[in-house]
Image (cartoon, rainbow, N blue to C red; front, side, top):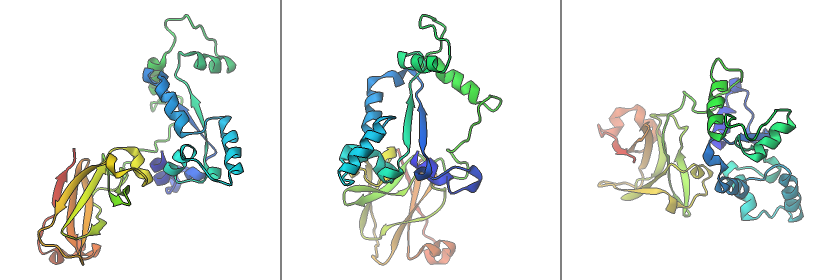
Length: 260
């Protein structure tokens, strides 16, 4: 969600606001697994729902903005202050009592004993039908963006035992990024966990590739780039401009890594 808002709000044609300017976000649960108590527990652990928001906001103000770990989880992920956080509305999956109450309040006739009534599973199918190109709902596709790579991983390095993201899932293919000084060895960390985007994820959650350079020079820099959905390349150069001049690279081909 953070990536989708960040990338698309920069494009004026999408008319999408930056996340800090969004007042409210609605989340519609679908699929039978969304009925599980663990899903509710995770939402309650990460975000402040409906009327709880005002209570938590008052609590934060009383603490002189001393936010506890549980209250700040989603703020860290989104990179927002407490007063910039949008409110969240969670709509339950169809077919459960909570959903029935909402439907009744909106004037929808509900028969709990109707075996043909939509459930969490059929709700997905109905939603897909309504959201198709010829459906009656307007859909704005925020991600994936066809201008960006369908890269599967977050690539980063260890910074104070936190995962520092260098390449994310919205990074363009074939673009070189400065990674680290070319010492005799270094680690490339990678993961598909979305919390990596916060730059606060514990490095122990990431997978690690150890690289040893035979001829190293601390004046040189290791550059990396994504070239396919699961393929990474690294190359050593003095400056990123060297990639525009093959002679400076002395014919050395980039090293390729397939991520699994």
